Length: 105
Image 1: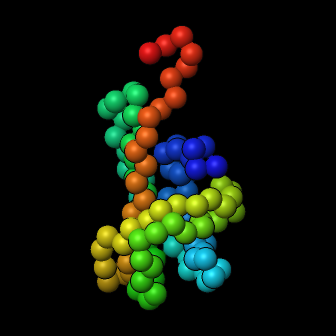
Image 2: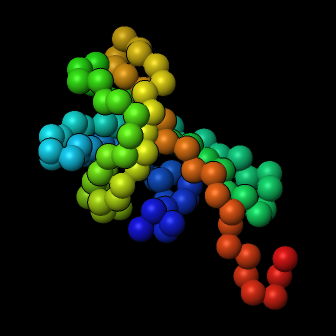
Image 3: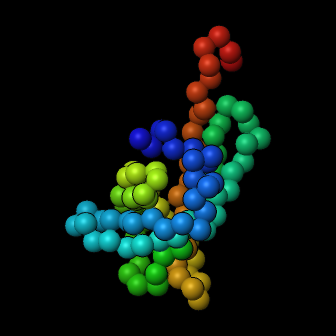
């Protein structure tokens, strides 16, 4: 599933909420607040997602299950990056080779 997620899939859902679950199925709600990409290299897909979560609990960096009504459930590695007055910021970074159509290089 993760390989099917790209920048274009997330862009329409900026300012929408995602349910985030740990291994014990504890739920935290986060808002996707930014999708930023760098498409300067056609062979590399590079983008990041910034989420805003509550001040408590702080989620340590690791893989969590995210769930969104339109996208579905998927696993995502997030890192806490900043404390702001309105909540904690978390980032997920995607950096991978794009699939090149056969016959092209």
